[in-house]
Length: 112
Image (cartoon, rainbow, N blue to C red):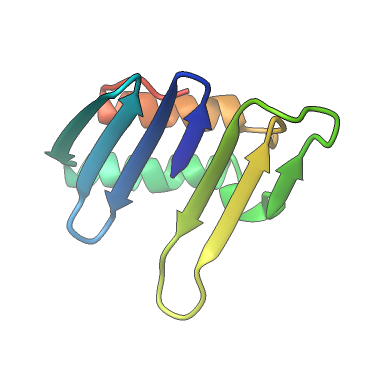
């Protein structure tokens, strides 16, 4: 999951097999990285929350053609067979705010 905004870039990678979460922020010449291992209950809650916001049903592309600069985001779900990719530029699916809240709660770090 990547989000690029003016003044910074957030990247969160969550491996549901190893339950390892890696959070990164880059901006202004600084980079910060944080890792942790999720509990089984937290990983299971994440999966349930992603089902509730219907992440898999989001369109693959959300773009506002009237804004030339701003926020870009992307999500990639890596799995056996075919990976699922979602991305956008200054436009977000229903459930986006809840998605960001879920990532903040699970990582314990800023994510917008």
